[in-house]
Length: 174
Image (spheres, helix red, strand yellow):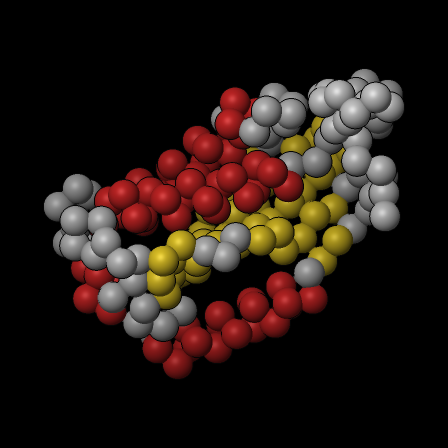
């Protein structure tokens, strides 16, 4: 197992020095889920929530959260992200899947930004719909893929299966 880089040799917390790392294209994808009552999801998709268009407001919240990750997670570097995309899609009559894709040409990865984006997107869906469905369940949230940097490419095996399953479910319930 690799050494934890957020601690120095004495065990004190530190922000990792990325100054000597090369600039590379770094991409991270993450996913999260919101499960709710079927009527809640129908209300969201039909844009009948009194507070506004849930999907678009949640998308904007996720993008904003990715840009603010260093203010939320103590040892993350502030980053000038090149791109943040959030996709929200129903996979059946109860579940909404959220996927983020974050990109940067930089010296450190964007996994935390991708995970923060999906988490805050899900929290925003909950916030906008809690008056009609307090029983919504959020998560799990997980990294699907990352590329760039010294550690190379990571692809969660279930990411391939998840995309295929989501496409199949959308086709079945479309």
